[in-house]
Image (cartoon, rainbow, N blue to C red; front, side, top):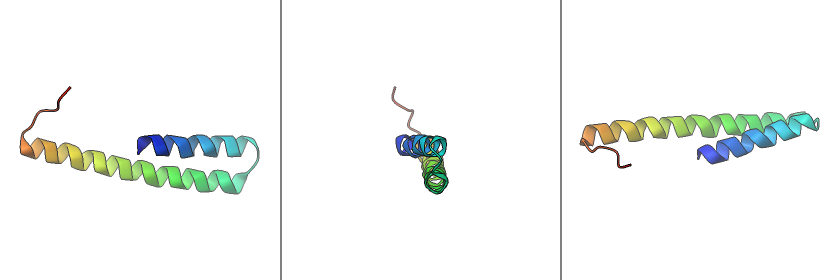
Length: 58
């Protein structure tokens, strides 16, 4: 999911360089939404693993 956010961020940067403001704004908005979903899922995963008492496998 973080990869998708980075992909949309790169699309936004490229669109901004070429002057496509609408596409750049939309791609930035999508990247923000996906990034925040990633952060929420990461926190939920860390909390659930801490409550179960399992140590992370490396």
